[in-house]
Amino acid sequence: MTKIPSAVLGASGESLVLSKLLLNGFIAGKAPEFTKDFDLVVVSDDGIHSAPIQVKTTTTRHQWLMSKKHEKVIENLIFCFVRISEQTNEEKIYLLDAQTVSHVLRKSHQIWLKIPAQKSTEKNNTNMRVLLSDYNKLSGLPTTIRNLQSEEKDLSEYLSKTEIDFLSEYSEGWMEKYEGDWALIKRYSEASKEVTGRDNQIIREALSIAIPLMLRHSLAWLNTSEMMRILEAYGGRTRTDLLNGRELKELIIQIIDGLSEGERHDAQPNSPNLDDLVEKYLADITDRELGK
Image (cartoon, rainbow, N blue to C red):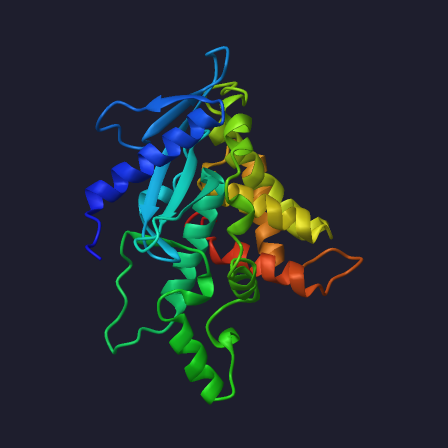
């Protein structure tokens, strides 16, 4: 069968999603030509709220090519990942929010960088990213696993527990719950608008303050883990030296130093799950922001 040209494939995916939106009762249309970050727009019944939609279409079974720019979270943006079979023309559409996409792309690229190169040359930290329906098929990972097994070793030689858990969580089938989730469009197109004009910045700063406090004084591993995921989705941590207030900076630096020296909650000083989060948190801290 003749391969579908990429331009035709992209246009087909956009038209397919638009038709599904209209059939599901949404008020939707195409964005103006050459709009940079999205292809379609959905508006609420009263015309007050809207949600932009970016469509990504593939004919492969398990991957969509992305780029580093997709790690940036755009407010209310929804991704529609379309898969069209060249043999049967059967299609599937997966709807994911921008925060989820950002998290998955950031974490998977971080893992890819840690996996040994298949050739002697060093890996280049490119802008290319990939969304996979099974991250156990991440480029180079199957070969790395086979090589480790032959030496009676495992992925802990290269990856942290958090990263290994990510591969388990985002293995075959993780996208199924997003298939045909048109309710996500409704939730986002009717979502509240920006309150202050600086909501993203304020959320990042608040979480940048709260997370080290939670790591040092809380046993709520799951809540802390989710807070870190949210912060990552909103663009990452605000550097300690950029926080407002001298006393606040000194407090956070003191907590960071304590975490580095092994200080934990008194009731349970040894918690592997929290230790993994602390390791991940400290890996992102630089001496410069601590004034060292």
